[in-house]
Image (cartoon, rainbow, N blue to C red):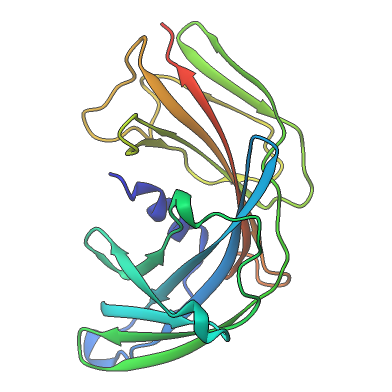
Length: 233
């Protein structure tokens, strides 16, 4: 469940690959590079995120930027889903410096021993974390409200436990959304998990922006608002 949010991210992307009989498939992959932004204390921090999507099961995916000093990025599958591979930044990867801008080349090796090369251009466009105005409990329900932002295409709300595992993820919501409520019986909780009164969780409000003219195909940027909460009954 730790990588569950990847499935929600993948759900943001409309597959451009037509379904066909397995013997007729020509394996094709597409890479996507975008910047993730978060604010810690008064510092605005940035990190690189990579995603590869394919029409056939992949065995491995790597990516490189135009800067040789960046080395090789290795993407990983989301559990057993080998159609989507991800490179996610860890906390220590966030920096006040923007990631390397320019061309990112992806090499996808398929389980059939075929391979495909794709390219994505990373610009310095970023979006900033949601301006959350309310985080409060009303009758055992967590209420989150934020200011409207015309630059946002999609929101996803998530909760993590103290071990850093994601235990709740909402479905993708329209950029016109401005509030969300979480309660014990809501769809989106991990299997056999329910919120416990007195437990501490990390709330995330994730925002996403698509590349211009490519809504539903390529992500341009992501931002993360985070806040520690104690669940109330």
